[in-house]
Length: 173
Image (cartoon, rainbow, N blue to C red; front, side):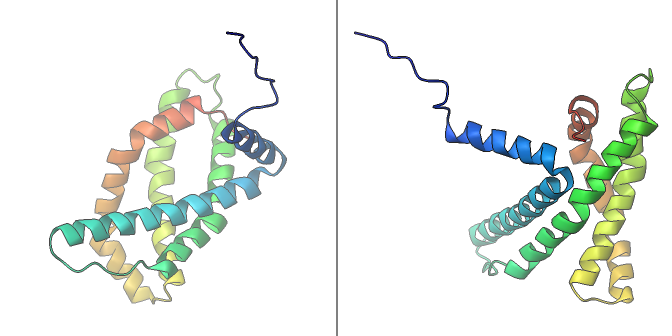
C-alpha cells in the first residue's frame, strides 16, 4: 500500500489558530492579552455559575439563571484591568529582578504572592464594587467578610501555577 505524504501547509486548524494568536501577541501584545483576559474571565465566570447550578440541582435546591451581566462584568474587568495590569507587572518584574539574580526564582515568587496578589485582589474587589454600582459601605463590608479568606485561597491555589508562570514562561514584550 503506497504511503502518502502530507504537505507541510496542511496543518491543523488548531495549529494555525495558535500561530495567528502568537502573531497577534507579538504585534499587539497589550490588546491581545486584554481581549484574551476578557474572554477567559467571562468564560471562567460562566463555568463557575454552571458548576454552582449543577451542585444546587444535585442537592435539590433550585438553580439560579445564568447571570449574563455578572459574566459581562468579569469580561470588562479582564479586558480593561487584568490584561494591561498583568502585562506591565510582568515586564517590570523582568526589570526589577532579572534572571541573572541568583535568587530571582524566590524573589519573583515573593513579589508576586506577597505584593501583587494582595493588591490585585483589592483592585478586583474595588472595580467589581463599582461595576455592580454599589457604595463604599458595601465595599467595606465585602472586604471585611471575604478579602482575607479569598487571599489565603489565592495563595493556596495559584502559588504553584505562578511559580511556573513567573520563572519559566517567557514574557512577551
